[in-house]
Length: 451
Ligand SMILES: NC(=O)c1ccc[n+]([C@@H]2O[C@H](COP(=O)([O-])OP(=O)(O)OC[C@H]3O[C@@H](n4cnc5c(N)ncnc54)[C@H](O)[C@@H]3O)[C@@H](O)[C@H]2O)c1
Ligand SMILES: O=c1ccn([C@@H]2O[C@H](COP(=O)(O)OP(=O)(O)O[C@H]3O[C@H](CO)[C@@H](O)[C@H](O)[C@H]3O)[C@@H](O)[C@H]2O)c(=O)[nH]1
Image 1 (cartoon, rainbow, N blue to C red):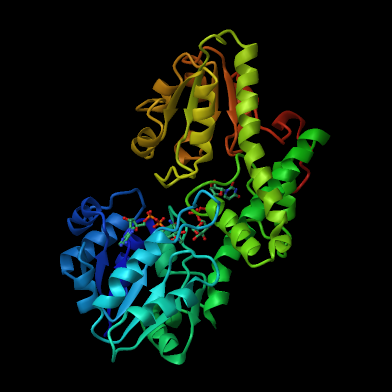
Image 2: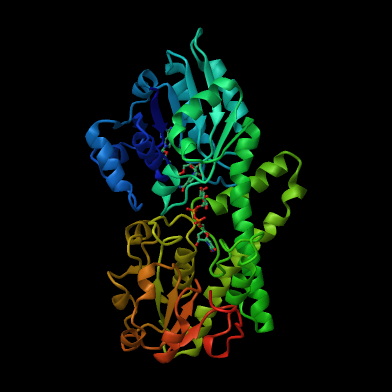
């Protein structure tokens, strides 16, 4: 059985390493961050991901899953190396590939036996071919090292499930031996019926970014419709439900609200635009600039609405804003390009006293936005608030008691920027309930039969 290394043990790599151990392989996780490696080796996941601590601990205890900062150890022991390092946005909008190149520069000269290097990081099309040439120039004579691309589609907050039960596997291969080895690694999900798409390196790289660009487009489409609904007095929630019943459209990713954020969709859309420009194909993806603009307008919209409430209310001089949610989405503590945190920071810059509550992301949020106040629970966050903003749809916000909260705030105005709260409950408790792009329950035109 092959031994696997997973290089880069962040959100993707730590989950993938534990997933590979669950599939029965001996796995070595490698990272340059000694603090992260110490935590993982001790069975601690340094971020919030449901189900991952249990999986990690189980396999650290069996000894099947080990962690090290030593690339030499990974090179010596593993036959297959998954590259899972970050590819953040650079100043130009293009992907910053320095970590990927650093891995190859360190790993390739250390290899003493044939190996398969499998990219999982999200990269611009053409990267794998470039790395193939680079590896060939760095390896010892007499050994064969192949490059394959196996993009990852996991969602944060559902990462363990998505790793063990992906909805498809994509293998970008330059030759048959890579495909054979990848089929061995994923034998269990393949036996469970997960479809496999085997293709060339470039197509595999492009599948990943185009999937994210498509998801971003779907979100911006429904947010554009929300703008139109607002202008026309129509209801985007009903519109989305009616659209979603059409199987050709599908109900997922039609959640209108504050728009997309996180460590993937925003940067991958920008990187795709940048790469298409480099390839002389900028025109083909010109619409993605519109997708981005719509997404940015959602944040602008909520900031403007909160300021409007503050200006009209009693506490404008040092208006108090309660922000519910800091993570870019629920079930994650990731605050990379978080719409919630951007709105909170912009209101702070505008002079408001902003207090944020998030069930798990407060520590990370504080490290990037220390100027904001953080509360230990939603009730403390809402104390004397002039406006309450619902910016990340954590399930616990759905069970807040609007009657109790009304007694705590100074001005009972709630902006539900994620469109998931039960408007009727808040209205019945005497709140001014705002939900851009929607018609509030008493006058709803929804005639779609329940179910
Ligand atoms: N987060 C996700 O949900 C997700 C899902 C699919 C794909 N991806 C893609 O996976 C890649 C990683 O994303 P992430 O969210 O896990 O990022 P991350 O920042 O959480 O993790 C990256 C890790 O790589 C490590 N690293 C950097 N340079 C290194 C080096 N030279 N050697 C070894 N380790 C090194 C960092 O210390 C860090 O722990 C990105 O390309 C991302 O687009 C992420
Ligand atoms: O209807 C929706 C669905 C999502 N979002 C927002 O879109 C963002 C991204 O959500 P999601 O895609 O669930 O989160 P990620 O964990 O970033 O996952 C995306 O990015 C990963 C990294 O590339 C990919 O692997 C996944 O397939 C892809 O869904 C979040 O801010 C959500 O709040 C909406 O606004 N409306």
